[in-house]
Image 1 (cartoon, one colour):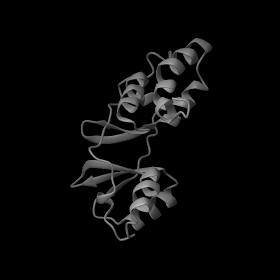
Image 2: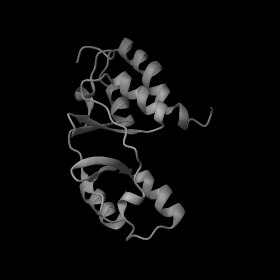
Image 3: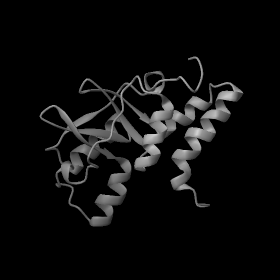
Image 4: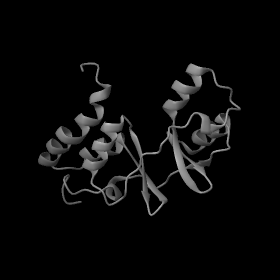
Length: 153
């Protein structure tokens, strides 16, 4: 890794991504997420990514609206699916995450899911950066992503 300004998504993304068919139920998807120990899955329809379901969707959408566990996962997924290419910069991902109010961003190259980058991945990047990079990343990316979640705003 050279520096925070030129670090790409491919450098920090998680390459293992779980996807589910849009016809699966809320219960089946939740079990798959638990078994895989992931906080998000990509929802696919005819081998095309059409949405994302996060652990937060279960807490907010399923619980708040009292959906049955037999509800199709497609009904609670977040859509449209915002994504990024693996050769984009971490800054670009942070900007997109901030602008869209999201914390998990699928990485799609040539129509194929190749990974996922999360707000946590960006924070973890700070642990291996030199001091100047940490300052730059914090002020440009981390502060921007988490500004929507601060109780002080």
